[in-house]
Amino acid sequence: MRVLAIALLASIASVGALAAPTASAAKRVPCVIGEKGGPKCSVLEARVKWAADGDTIKPKIRKGNKWLTKRPVRMTGIQAMELYNYSRRSRKGECMAVEAAEALDRLVHGQVFRLVSMRKAAGGGARGRLRSTLQVKKGGRWIDPAMVLLEKGLVLWNPDGDEWAWNDAYSGIAQEAAARGVGIWNPEACKRPGPSQNSPLKIKVKWNGGGHETANSEWVRITNQDPFFPVSLAGWRLRDASARSKGVKDKGAYRFPADAEIPAGGSVIVRVGRGTNGNGTFYWGLGNPLFQNVKKDKRNMGDGVYLFDPQLEMRAHVQYPCRTSCVEPLAGKVNVTARYEGATYEWVTVSNTSGEPISLDGYEMESVPWFYEFGPADALAPGQALILFRNKADFVPVTDARAGLVPAVPGRVPFQNATIFRNWGHTEALFGDKSDIVTLRNPFGAPVICHAWGGERCPSA
Image 1: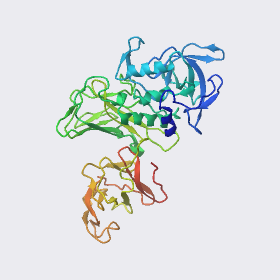
Image 2: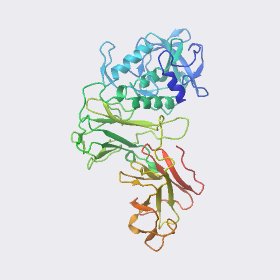
Image 3: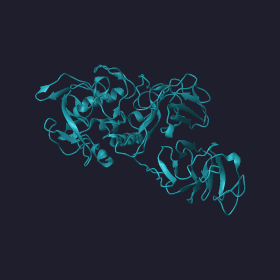
Image 4: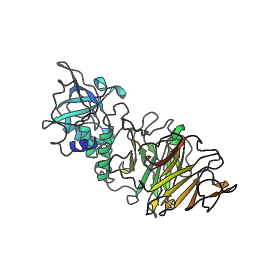
C-alpha cells in the first residue's frame, strides 16, 4: 500500500491509478486509488465551485439526473489548520490554513468528482456534515486531493476508526512530508523565527496506559535539548490531529500557562487528565483518554502530537506508529529475561548481546498494566546487563556462577555481567507464575523484544 500511495504523488499528471469509469456509472471503486485487493467504497458524484477550507467542501450531490442542495462534506483522514476568515477573496488563518484551502480550491474548483466512502451515502459526520474522501480526475487519471495536501505538508493526518481504508497511506505520506520539513513541518514556514528558535525540542507521547487506561495514564513529555537556555512555553499549545485549536467540548488544544518553562536540558510532562499543575507537570484537563491506541489490525490506527509556538508554527512533533524509514536501533542487539517464579523475588534482565554500546533512553519495560521507563543513564556496554528489580530494597547483588537462577541466600541474589541495577518500585508481585509477558517497547510504543511464558505470545510490531 505504501509504495502505491507514494507512486501516486510523483506529480499531478502522474498521480493516481488507471482511468476508471465516471462516478455516476461506478457503484463501488477501490477506496485507495491504485490499491489492489483493498476495500471497495461507495461513490457519489458531486460538484463544487470552491473549497470552504483545507478539509471541507460544500458541493451539490447528484441523485439521478438532479443536483441536490449543497451539503457540507468533511474530508476523511486529514485535518487542516483553522481559518479565521473564510472569504475566498480574503482568507486568513493559522499557519498553512490559507495555503491548504487554496490548494484544495485548485484541485476541485468547477470539477465534477467522486465522494468516496466505506459507508453508504458517504457516511455521517459531526454538525450534519458528510464524511468522505475525494477523487478528482486530472489529465485523464483519478487523484486523491488529500494525498496531495499531505504530500505538500499542508495538513495533518487525522486517523479515522470507521473510515479506516486510508489510514496507512495517509499516515505514511504525512511522515515523509515531516521528514522533508515541508509546509507545516517547517518551523519557519509562515512568519519570522519564533521564541527560542535555536533550542531543539523533542516530544515523547505515552499513548497506551495499559490495562487500567485513564486520561492521566496518557502523557506527553517535552524535552529541551538545549543545555544552556530554558524555553518559556507561555502562549504555546499542544494538540493531537483531531483537536481544534479554538477548543471543542472535552477536547481542544492544551494551552500552557504564562509561567510554564522547560529548564535547560530538562523536560516537562503534560498529563491528559485533571490535576493541579506543579513540579514540571501540567494537566490537560480532559475526562477521558485522548490518543488513539495502536493495534495490529486492518484499521492501521495511530495518532500524533504537535507542539505550536505563539506564532502557531509547529516546533516539535511525534507521529506513531512509524510507517516510513522504520529502523529499530536495538533490533537483534538485546535480550530480555524475566525472573517470575514466586512473588518473593522478581526482576527483569536486559542484556546487550551486540558488540557495540546501546542506549535504553526512552524505552520502556512493560508488564501490563505497569511500565518502567529507562533514562539517559541506562546505556549498556557490549555484553553488559541491566537488572530491573521489582523492589530493589530487598536485594544485595553478588557475583555467582548460578547467575539469574535462584537467590543464593535470603536477601542476596546472584547476577553476572550486571553493573546497572534499577528499582521498579513495586512491593506486590508483578508477574504471573503460570503465564505472562514482559515486553521492551521503543519510544514510539512498538515492541522490540519480549519474554513470554505459559502459552502467552509476544506482541507483534
